Image (cartoon, rainbow, N blue to C red):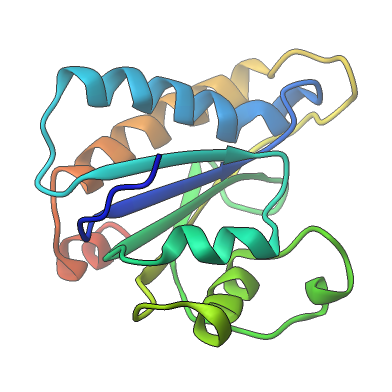
Length: 165
């Protein structure tokens, strides 16, 4: 359920049946538990998907900050947090979209100004069907969880930018 107040929307994608690809959904599950016990400066909306889709552009309406979370084979360990800019990209030709493409779609169809977009790419190593998350990925997940908790306790772009370094 999306809040009508300007807040933070967290969109995490991944397939829990594909080893380290479960990192996004696992982190979102942990964050939901943490959010029940903690008060953040802005309301937080959590959305999990198997992959980012055009429909996710509407989830950005009315939000101040948008954090996209996914596992990555190319991110440095344990994770990479980066600022996003809306971008039309080749992912428009498939059902799955990049976070930058979701922001671009929002610019086209959104009813409110686009939120500041951020991508958290958490390093994964093994994505085999039926596999459990690897020990390394679970360690990266724990470190990413602490990062997102720090981010959610701050409501300004400068604090989030400082975490990118």
